[in-house]
Length: 233
Image (cartoon, rainbow, N blue to C red; front, side):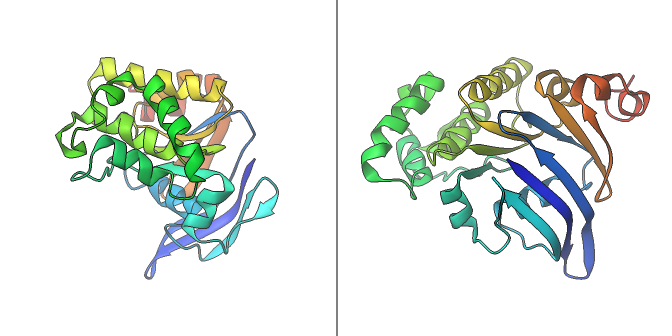
């Protein structure tokens, strides 16, 4: 579904990604592992079109999308849940969700909202609440729900468990598994490496802007380098 081929990206003169390549097959959960500053968020933003690439190719369902704007990539079926949630704090839960559907036909919006409310019942209860008044966990649910409103086939999840209590981490990652069962393909950046490798099919390890290791999630979880660097074992 997604193929990243030797992507280079820069912040001014500083090169952040040095020829990164990876792929995500339809129906997979693929996780991207790395320390802070390794290039994980940069890669997600390049895929979604928020940041430009300097060179390389991005193919989605076999077609190059390099020249498409971020909103055009949303229309193609790619949605990103950004690091730090970034909900529209002054707006209500319902209005945040409606904004996620800005590229959809208006007649599809009520049904999509009900789908999100079924997935996250607390959002249904608080649909008229100001988003900024929600707890961190509820805001993360809203950020995921807002992305789902665009009807994505590929969901880019950037640190969905950041700052959440363990019980909420389990709930959010359980939702990721449920979305895959519904047919959504997922590329996941997650600081909880153990949990990410538990739910993922495959994984990539990125260090200083380069992919240094990849393989089946179970194999990565047992790799001594991963265990020492990211699992503390």
